[in-house]
Amino acid sequence: MVLSDKVYKITSRILFVFVLGYLLLRIFNVETLHDEVATYIFYFYHGDFIGDAIQWDANNHLLNSFIGHLMYQFVGDNIPVLRLPNILAYVAFFFGTVQLTKNYHSNWLKILSLIALNSIPFIIEYFGNMRGYGLSLGFFVWALVYIVKYGKSFAHKHLIITYLFLVLAVSANLTFVNTSLLILGMAFIVRLLQNGNRPIKTRFAELAIHGLFVFSLLPFIYFGLKLKEKGALYYGSLDGLWDVTGMTLSKYTLFISGSWLIPIYLIIFISFLYHALKILRTQLKVNWSKSPFLIYSTIFFGNIVGILILAIVLEVNYPEDRTAMYLVLVFLLLIF
Image (cartoon, rainbow, N blue to C red; front, side):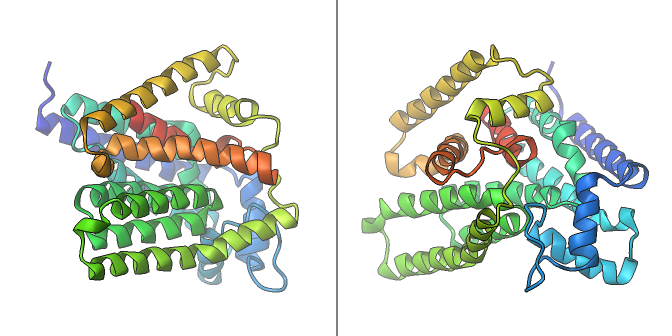
């Protein structure tokens, strides 16, 4: 049965209203969580997210702390209102997922992907908390939207918007530093391969955009290193990629986490890589960025490699559940 455009639009609107309504009910009815209490006391109330009196803790999601401290001056300890910025981030998240899925070849695929991306309680409920995760996910999906646009057009405005959303995502959640560096590498390398076909003025303009992006990331990279130095990057452990990252993501997304899942994931990952290589063989290598699948593959597998390097070389803990949930979103985009 073919799903009409009208049914798709109505269904997507119902999905948006349902999930948004669910989140609004949560912000008024769910008691303040432990991490929210810490966020409120240290960063919203005291404002110790920067400066000499800073409270060194991984719970300090800088953009969220800044917005919360600013709002506290006007609304005090009104927890539902303090949760609203993350609710607004869900609005951005939803319409970002619409953009990411709107070019699928069937309306069935569009609506199934929207439901999948917007109905995982483990992820969606962070939009109802006064933390940084909801904010970062809202910016992250729009960074994906614009890096896909840039990969097809190479328009400078798309690159600038991509980097803007990435800086905002990193400011709300430092776990997006790896993704930012991967996207920077993609954007730089694909154009480097085409240097012979572009005016020098264009090359310098792109280098300036890349340079400004790197400069914008440096304070957050420095902040992350300081957190590690202070022993504040305590979430997760060094027990292994599967035991810490794979198992917890499976547990909270699929509600199962047995080791028997490992060969299944390996088969899926190998199929991803096979499909990526197949696309590369059928397209000019310098045009790999025109394929959203290749962009998502680079982000997904690049992050896994980055996580391994950080853990093995710098002894940074493997990300656990919420600090790695962006991998679930990219995984689903690869599936669809």
